[in-house]
Length: 237
Length: 319
Image 1 (tube, helix red, strand yellow):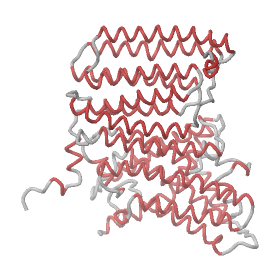
Image 2 (spheres, one colour):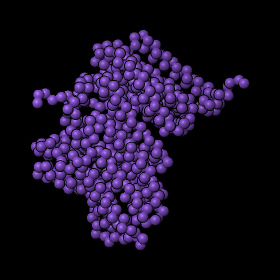
Image 3 (cartoon, chains in turn yellow, red):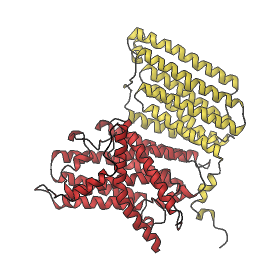
Image 4 (cartoon, rainbow over the protein chains, first blue to last red):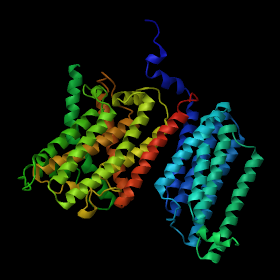
């Protein structure tokens, strides 16, 4: 008989592809959870839960960055993991919580499409992103290359969230989670950006949230509502 | 087929019959504790069954033979389904004959019969319940199939035995796709077993009922069989979930020494799963019937996402 052919064993294939180290598997798990959270955000009706989900996304991002750092030995990634933890899990959600308390908005029932349609479009975007990322991730030499598709999918999903929501705060959360997706894409494709760039982006995000927070109050002063549809009247015709 | 495997199969069949009402009682007890009530005790569903079996059955005048036969068919379907799931060992003579698609088919068969029986008498509530049950069922079934297909693509087989063998006894691997499948499966479990976000099992308001509205006309031994079948269904779903997502500790083929440990571990998993289910039910509020399609649609999409991530992350660049 001799040695059995590889194809005769149903488990052979799964063993070949499962030779990834445990840390890579953990990163893949984090990536999958990121995508799961992105979908949860897309289907969420309450602003309060949306912000909590954003904090969870930041936590996942921080954990996966720390795992990538320990696996690849790139020490600057530890700093960016810590920065993510501080900024996106603690400071920004805290600011947003304060904002919605001050603005006393808890509900966001209005979406442009109903939620199942949005989710269906989301699935289409995920397929698109996976296809788009496949040739890129084959060229990348990092252990996290297969998560690039998920990173692009979460960028597109956040973009979709910004398009389908009409209120201001969910749009800002969508913007922030898009930044999360981009950060994850950078980590998975090239083990992160240089430290200076990362610090710059973190500062930008922080300042952006402050400015948008001031905008919220101005918008509410002008229109008595946070619905951005009212801003279409500002066009002169 | 050897005698020991046959013995084990018989043992499991008897065990699940007793375990199903106990699991239901445990879930109810946990819910009572979480709501600051003392609760009726874990044995209450068993006591209810005993009481119902001693009563005289009352039938409507226009009840057909289908109405009388349905409790037995329902009970047989659910007992078979529970017997097919590898609960404590993978060495079972019945299981190789069926795979996960047949399992879903058995659930569908039971659903068709209970819905027909509910419409048989011709009362408004029975018809209402049957229609809602079909609505939930036709949305939950594809989601369940997708969850099972995710597990099947990992183990290259639709046989539940092979799936469990692959996940439990091969080298330990994290499957991100199973995270999606697990969330989708919990949603399907809640919908299919008439638990809280979809249906309230303890409601007395007929207009909000789904499953209870269908069995309003049953009494005595018929009702007992229907309720026992519901308990078996809950146990079947819980054991399928355990087999797919936390199969570790199940006894392998011909591994009789591991059996007592496997039984203990299974008991522990069931207790944890029951407490988790009660917690989930206490934390969530019942949703409107018109929200159910959205809930089930989300479950289906999550299961599809599981399949997609499987092809992206777990095929290791061969895609």
